[in-house]
Length: 120
Image (cartoon, one colour):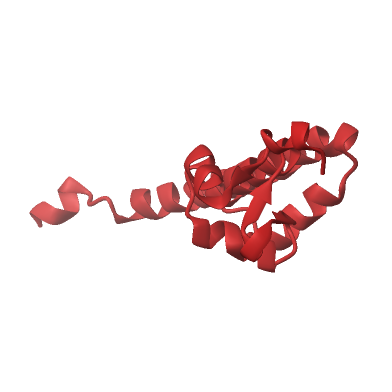
């Protein structure tokens, strides 16, 4: 890699700060094949700006409880179509959560006591 491109690389500690996740999580995403950092001397992981964006997307989707396999499918999309796939994935998660919330609200409503019944 040319010396002029080195300033754009960040280490795992800095990427961890940038994404708000742990180095351990980033290493896990690497182990799962979701991100592939460059390796410098002594195995130090270095991430390009594109890899940093990819890691940030992974962290965002994981915070939304998107499974790693679904994230893998998002990342497999060409960059031009990735945003559409991300929106579709997040909409699916939102629909799932909405259904779960409706179930919780129904259960809550069913457990509300009837004041007339409690007085008897």
